[in-house]
Amino acid sequence: MSGEPAPTTATATVTATRGTGAGSALYGLFRGTQAALSVAPLLLAALLADDRPPPGRLALALAAGCAGVLAMFASHDLLDLRRDRHRHDLVAATDSRDIDAAGARHPVAQGRLGVATAAGVTVALAGLSLAIAVVLNPVCAALLSLAAALQVG
Image (cartoon, rainbow, N blue to C red; front, side, top):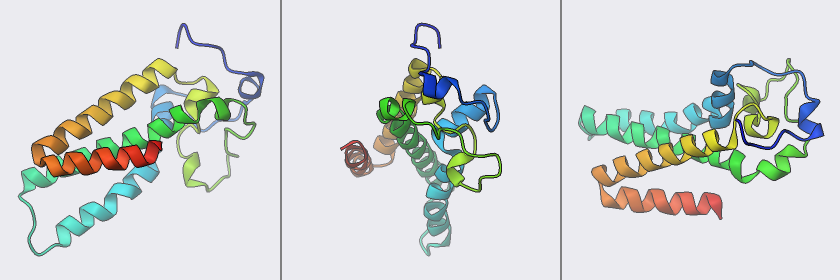
């Protein structure tokens, strides 16, 4: 967090937040609830399939999927950082039922999580996801790379 610009007036005046710790900031960066909901159908499909993969392979696929989804949600916060720093609605009302409001909402734009920290964790998770995908099958890695390119583009 040191060496990074202070939040703008719009973000500095925001006072009501859901959770104040680093865990809440990371959970918000990763959109933890949305990430779990994104991976759950894939896990359920694998578990219900007639020809289930071996447990070790399934665990690797789940780890790759989770790391990839977390990196994707975090990268969205980093890609939208400039725009988000000028928004006045970074924090949901405490009675909000918005799934996006679980954890800290846009923690990097709020100045609650440093850009370098968020970028480092995002790159590490993306790298982990890609490395596991290569181990599983190079086609998985190619599909993961294509999905990432579509998200960024």
